[in-house]
Length: 500
Ligand code: HEC
Image (cartoon, rainbow, N blue to C red; front, side, top):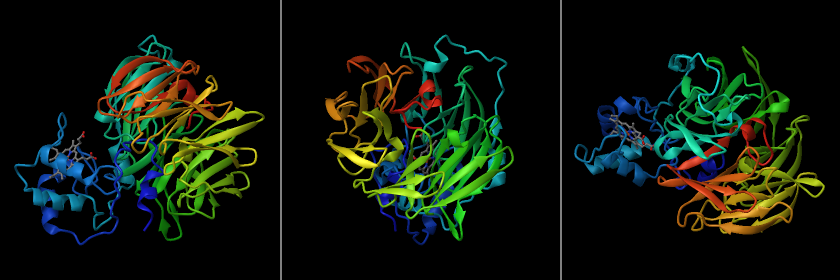
């Protein structure tokens, strides 16, 4: 069995990280009484196969971040303001405990989600006859803020820091939303496999489709024509047309007899395609899409790699090994592994950032297990600095318009701290505690880099705006667990300092 922490922690892009539970993968003999209770009381909303319907999927992969104690609490008391009812009066607690064991175990029959399920799930909404924004804010300096607390998103004016609108999303968005190259549309992926297309100018959804049962993230091609989703369940990639979200191709993540979970998929703009990280096959896949098909190039690697970082030209890929103690550098042109970096402490390369330092370019990555930041010289892949921090981190961010890089302390007792690193001296020059006791994390900059927006990851959370030069606080906006925020300009121009 894999190390349970690395099994699901590494590829996490965004989500609720305060809960670290490992999931039993061993299938126990099914408890037929619990199954019956499930069919009688839960299946109507959560699906006969537990793959979700009106309510979310209840499978081990889906529940990876929900503690069993919290699941019991939800089942006893329901969730306020949602359709999840309380069962304390109907089902004895002992039976609810057995239901928990049931939903945290894989079903006897692996759940399926096939071509007809995907195509039949597609919904389109009326397309408004208007192609100008219905608001006056700069359309290139907008932010989408994902609020996991109540499954909503806020469209934020990046100059005034005021909400333009706030709308419901699918349950538990996963991975960052992706913008069309012109910034007009945004595409979301949810944990349970829903892809949604939202028209920012008209502030309305245009189409949705369910591409899988458990989805990791979504990528958009540089030309904006194709979307691709990475799935854990079933283990595949699903290629869509971005126009109407119609299905182009299902790409099973198989090699020989092994079908792999897909940890993540990334767009590689200069390569006109995508690169996928496979959890259970030691290969990196380069995928080149077309209107009817997709070409797959398989690059064998000596380790299982997931969680990737790319250099600015997308010539090199740096992938963390699943064991968590090294990272490998793969030349995407030749397919050769050109360096093996030993980085203890499980680097979180997916949120690594680069900047120009002296006459070279450096990469800084937080570590998910060690209390330190690692800075690597990208010309020779040598670690040139390790910065001790107050706990393991998750996100780092910077912008060419800012002299500083920001990095959170996401785990442990100091999760309320944020370190500011001077990009010239490579030292931590300031540590902020924006909201004592509450997790702070995920910074994104305005288009010009003048302001940095930080999240307080709490159901009663906030978005805090800082002047990125003076590091003074400018504004606070209350938000419900604002997990991530995405600036149209920075994301569509692949600005250095932001992860993609
Ligand atoms: C009337 C519909 C309905 C029924 C019946 C129902 N649920 Fe739910 N359940 C929901 C909805 C909707 C949510 C999502 C709530 C939210 O938005 O947080 C949910 C959430 C949950 C969650 C939390 C999932 C997560 O990832 O946070 C668990 C656990 C759960 N339900 C278990 C059960 C069990 C077990 C039963 C049967 C005993 C059951 N539910 C019956 C609608 C229902």
